[in-house]
Image (cartoon, rainbow, N blue to C red; front, side, top):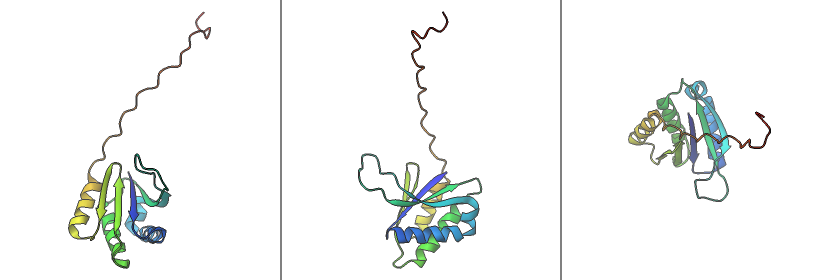
Length: 134
């Protein structure tokens, strides 16, 4: 599962959260954490912004991640707003970091992801006139 996290405050805040999660034992065990460039939303043009991306494995704990996120947020001046936690087409914003928001985040992360849409098979190339089978 891939999760993207964006925060207010720019790159310095993302780097702070990145360092925080890399030191968190639960995040270290269950997710690969890195800073990446976000892709623009459909129909949106403009500069790509940085996000924190977590790629998780089977040892992932959404509750541990939510707790680490909440604890980091409490260490920041004015409780930085976590503008988005995205998993596929699901987005959760965290303003206050209260229990209800964290419960909503955990529920969203534990929900099974929507299946990827099936791709149509590509048609076979036209081999007419290739001399095969003659």
